[in-house]
Amino acid sequence: MEKKLEKVVRILDEKLAENIVALKIDELTVISDYFVIATGTSAIHIRSLADELEEKLEKEDGIRPVAVEGRASGWILLDYSDILVHLFTPDAREYYKLERLWADSAKLDLSGIITER
Image 1 (cartoon, helix red, strand yellow):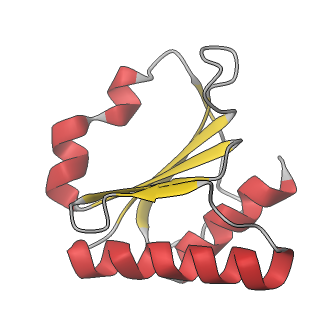
Image 2 (cartoon, helix red, strand yellow):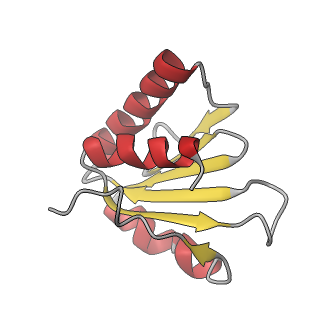
C-alpha cells in the first residue's frame, strides 16, 4: 500500500475516526487514485479530523491539500490529488452512500493499519 495512503488512514484512526474505508478508484476515473472515507461522531469531530490530517501531513511531510471543501457542513473533502479524503457525519455518510456509488472499485484491506476498538 502506498505510504501516503497508509499515513492518512493512521492519522484518522489515531484521531478516532470510525468506519474508515479506502477504495482504489484509479481504474474507474482520472480524478484520483484513492478515496478514503471516514465517519466522525459530529460536525466538530470531522472538522477536528480534517485539521489533524492537514496539520500532520504538512508538518511531517510537507504535503498540503490542493483544496478543502465543506468545512461548514457534514461532509468535508480534502483533495490531495492522488487521494481524496471524505469525512462525514453519520447522517451525511448514510445519505450520500459513496461506497455504494463506487461499488465497482477495489476496497483495500486496512486491518493491519486500523486499531480494533
